[in-house]
Length: 283
Picture (cartoon, rainbow, N blue to C red):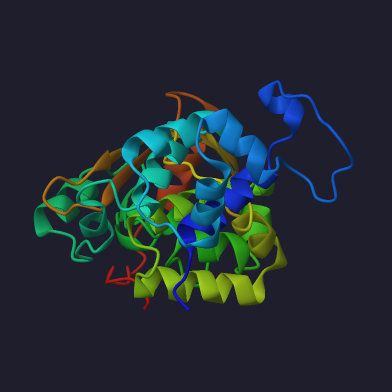
């Protein structure tokens, strides 16, 4: 049977809302949490049977207008609304972005190496680290290997200590992967990664079932490095124009702050270490 990614998403988002969240009176005893299908249909202004067919996978081609109405009914933010449109196949060019090349251009590698005093790296939509400069290697030295941010968070023993707010880091990683799944839910790399995390991490299974979607933010990263102590780093991410699906991420510490001094010390401690080549992500 074909996977019903659109229906799974709608059911999860419906279950996350209560009648009071959408200013709707609650009538009768509710056997399960969340809104009823009929209530979502009323809020979206669509036929209840039609909405049921969407959830069950018997209707797979809703119009953009219906998707917008469902987005409003389910209180979806911009990232989550775009994800809904991609799942329904009405966002043009979406699949091409996940099927991006994993090769990082020499010019981009040279640019990252020019950032000697701040971590810079390139990652894929599935959070694979495709290339990194020397300070990124030093920053992620506690992980073996430093290959994928989601795997490092959930499966590497170092993750719980490295991320000072582990719950927040875990939620962000899962929300980023959910966003990636909207571009191509059946992508082999994504499916392999999700299957591995689902098998080995109960925390990932719980968060993945929530269908929370979020792209990259500029929230500060609160880290604890075993060599230099706590770090508070902001970051910026940039789409790589000649390699759709790749992102260049640059971390930044407030000048003259303890975190800036810690980054300088980290670079000094790891100077001269032989760097492993940054190849393509593990498949």
